[in-house]
Image (tube, rainbow, N blue to C red):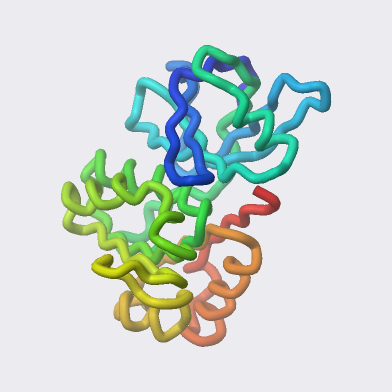
Length: 234
């Protein structure tokens, strides 16, 4: 059962040129699982609300964080006007895009702001030192669009069983990445044991649909090995 309450903003972090993280006071008596999401309601005339993934891990006890790509929408405009000390209404935990106990080898396919629940899950795995081998393929337009770039680099150093591969439409000189979009050939190359892994896909609906089709049709993975989360409308 999700709890609904008012939460105060503790900190706001600029992640990229158009993405911000909002860290809220965390209620100690409300638990959530890595990968779940929350409903965020703003105190505006139209009572704007969105469903946003929790980008922090349950292991980060001092706050709960959501991360949003800022667009021209009324919600984004109102959210971007908030500052530490302001309050908003939240409801969580929601969603089933979470780790399962049945696989010790998993892979994430993500695009853009779809990285938010994946960051939560990866941070949880790293902090708990779980016996799970993780490969993340993360697609973006350019290096300036990579959300949690430093976080992912640090987690790889802390946890050798985490491998992060970036795919960029506009590769940056000197930055190790795959040129272009994620496709079947790239998945086979970067995840040679793909047939043994549980896949989690999160991103824009078109990207999620495309990746699911590749895994099912081209790579012949059973549907029970594929879990998805769509980011609709941002």
